[in-house]
Image (cartoon, helix red, strand yellow):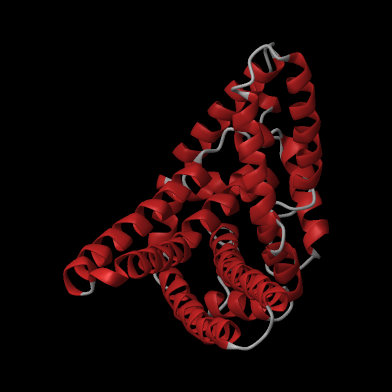
Length: 316
């Protein structure tokens, strides 16, 4: 995460993309609120009204996920370009890389982003929940078998719906399912999956989002308590949700940098070593320890992070 923040900080325009999409998301929430208010105030029966509210809720979360993943793909494309064109022997950086990556995200890759946004977050959350449940089961063999079955099922879904697919979408312009499958097979063939399995960056970023929402909701809620006490709960909860949305959108650039680092190291470790040789050595050492722990035997150091025959990734 430290290196990802450093990389995002070096790309000054990266934060501007999240600000623009945050404004778009707030605009969409405003329009969505008018639509929900119209449904609530309409004379539709309770059954039809609840179905409409369900559709509106899905549209809210889906649109929010699409906007976040548009930022994800845009930043991933820029970061891969920076890493691929870093070094003395590297080709020159294309002009306006951020604009080129953004145009690629909202045109060629838009369909893949919309499709992946439906399932990725839900499957990732389900995977975290099942892994946490497995650690608390104990010696109940029957329950352990059921949880293992669910875990294997979710692991199969992860092969086709994971956040690392967006980097492949940004770089190669492939379909989402193909990108997710290729990214997961790339991790397994190079051993990077052993690092990804213990990656806690997503949980840390989620805690930051929740903390941002709590701080925002608490500050606005306290102010509302003294001004309009009868609307304290409504205003405070709404402010908390808005705070979580804005903080989450701003942290997408960090998550995108983390996933891009994993993909670039799996494709070609020299991409990371040219950017930060000490960091590349730390990744190789940690990967060797994880693989050694997982297999229970010694693994030759030269087998860790084996380069694939793929050339350094370039923008399509």
